Amino acid sequence: MRHVMKTYGRKEISFVRGEGIWLFDSNGKKYLDALCGIAVTGLGHCHPSVVEAVSEQSKTLMHASNLYNIPEQEKLATELAKISQMDAMFFCNSGAEANEVAIKLARLYGHKRGAEKPNIIVMEQSFHGRTMATLSATGNRKVQAGFEPLLGGFSRVPFDDIDAVRAVGENNPDTVAILVEPVQGEGGIRIPRPTYLEELRDVCVKNNWLLMVDEVQSGMGRTGSWFAHQQTGIIPDVMTLAKGLGNGIPIGACLAKGEAAEILTPGTHGSTFGGNPVASRAALATIQAIAKESLLENAKRQGDLITKRLKEAFDGNRSVVNIRNKGLMIGVELNESCGQIVDLALESGLLLNVTADKVVRLLPPLILTDNDSEVMAGMVATVIKKFLSK
Ligand SMILES: *Cc1c(COP(=O)(O)O)cnc(C)c1O
Image (cartoon, rainbow, N blue to C red; front, side):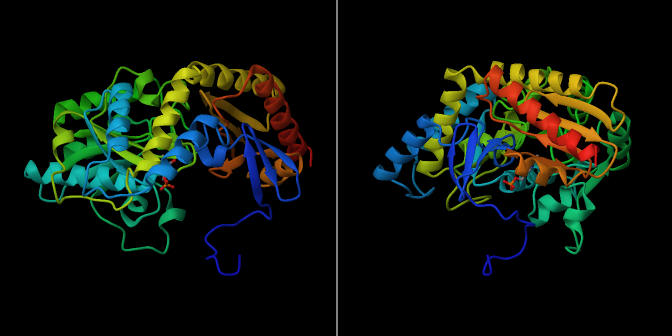
């Protein structure tokens, strides 16, 4: 890796093949994948429908340009509109890019309404990406450090605190939008109380702010519904997607509804690759497979099963502070830094990660069977116990 910039603390493992819930490294060792490339391969590795869609499209046409119609992109937009109730969307290549669109859209919306310095309310412990705008929106000093001056136009409040949102909004008449993750992923699988999004929706309606939900990690069935916010009564004005959208082929999207869907006009935004034929076909195949294989129901079932088994395994164990999940976003919070668990898991043939220093995070594939989940929960419990017994 001498000629690759050292932006990652990489493990000395090279994966060379994937099949369903399994990954294989260059030594032929097999790993159970409870991470999915960070919430990407929800259908498992090399799902036949996605493989076929990508291979077929690659042989037909890989790229033309957004200067022309892209029928595959239009088809994808139609399907995404159906499952999200959104009106229009912009396609890009990643989560950060999708959030850039949301931020630009909110600023245009604000200027249209006469705001001099449009302000977006963002949350502590949030993660929205690594570009300058999205790292400025992110609630994590480690992500921001060294990149000052940050982009202005963001006010930060504690997550799951509606009064703080109201206070900031009342103090700043230029407030135009709220950007929030329905479940904070990088922040440690933090799940707000059930009424939080509805309260945010109400505040937004009352003040004519846009409610923008970052579903880059929580979307595409991972939490047991197409999008996590659908488990509440709300419809957002803007939603961003990426990670699981193409099951491994890079694609992101910013979806909008009503007035928000009309804000971006010709010349205000663009992307060379966004929504290209191959990526669009991959996303379309991903959506179809999730529906056909009833994976929304399964994500909830398997997430609850794994969580139940983990709670049984750590019942009364005071080193484990909390075990929580929304479908297959699962967090096991310990009372100490536990980054070493990643290596112990690798040794035992299991992929997971640790986020927010103390939270073991599982983002397993949506295709797990009951038996897979039993095996996975057992391996996770064993690894955590091994770490705690040291
Ligand atoms: C991963 C993530 C992003 C950034 O996505 P990239 O594709 O890495 O740019 C943004 N928001 C959330 C909630 C994420 O989990």
